[in-house]
Image (tube, rainbow, N blue to C red):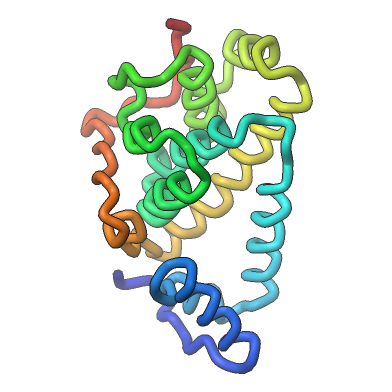
Length: 200
């Protein structure tokens, strides 16, 4: 990986703790961490919000994970896509579905609700945003207002991290590959814009 901002040494006492934790969790210290280490307040804020986000419990964790992966696939952030696929195994999510997120429109493994969530993630990630009243109404009916607010915020955070990674040239570091996980499905070459996911 060649990042646009060269990674710096993760030093000091705090750096030693971070390196130890990263090695325990990933088997190595991600190069992307060295990029973000240049501005530790930014890194801390991003990680802190990400940790708070994992404690939200009004929306199904699997739906949120698939939505984050859909954003990563749509934006083209291979780091987030690989990392979230890797984390799906640790969180006990359906790995067949996680593996198929990049080609969810062509896949038959997702439920109608999951397809709407994936479509919503892509529609929110489009510029301009392409969320329709019909799609939002279906999700509101299926999830309820609290869960939809939560899902929307997760997708917003996913856009922050994925777009930042792509801008800085941060790419996949092979977390899933290193664990022998099945390769992620490939996103179709014909870049389809986000739209309304039809109910099954």
